[in-house]
Image: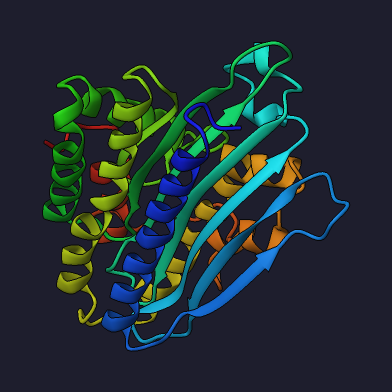
Amino acid sequence: MMASGGDTVRAVRTYLLELQQSITSTIAALDGTAFLTDVWEKPPGEPLQGSGVTQILENGPVFERAGCGFSHVTGPRLPPSATQHRPELAGAPFEAMGVSLVFHPRNPYVPTVHMNVRMLAATTAGQAPVCWFGGGMDLTPFYGFKEDAVHFHRTCKAALQPFGDDKYPRFKQWCDEYFFLKHRGEARGVGGVFFDDFAELGFERSLAMMQSVGSAFLGAYLPIVERRKDMAYGERERNFQLYRRGRYVEFNLVWDRGTHFGLQSGGRTESILLSMPPLASWSYLHQTEPGSPEEALYTRFLPRREWV
């Protein structure tokens, strides 16, 4: 079904599976805990068909929960979350594949991170298949460090630079606007880059850009983990981490198009919700202490700004 044929499908699938394995093997070595690997396939007769590999690490010394999933599915009609920018494709059969991850660290000084790269194609009656790409990565600290945000954004910018000077500023702004809790009026974190419905460079170059973003992930995130994972923390920092994780849950369930796409299309719920933290909390009218590191997150890091 993909616009460039079966060989392209196999090549992209191979890249995504190798990316997943590279990331999870590196994280497992850092944490000292193996990922559980769950290979799944949708039962015959369901509208959504396909298979995937869900890998998850839980209760490690560095990562309390780290989930990284690959999926490759086909369906009879695109769900509403996928056609809000492409109304002409409403109801079209589709094929989608991608890798998505969310890592929830144990130490509150290590930020949560999200990364996703994907390819999607749809076919309308009498028309050639339409193929596009999406993805990006973003950083969600509980305690902000300027050098971490700068490093993350510099790595994102470097990954996009070969594809045009406009890509990082465009996708950085898109990320800031997308990962925003409208019902709270606040950003989820310090951002990164995000793009969707992207095919403007032509198939091969758009694919190469998606791959460049995916392959940059470990370089963007691992140095931050290494800097922060052994910092001392106590009950105060842990409680704030759990409170801020609540915001992560709110965004993923209320606003995230990927979560909505998976659930609306009949995807595998257990794999879709691997992004959820193992523990989170909410408190009524939570207040931060003036001048505290917790207040600094709201005043210095969550407001939109240029990091590079």
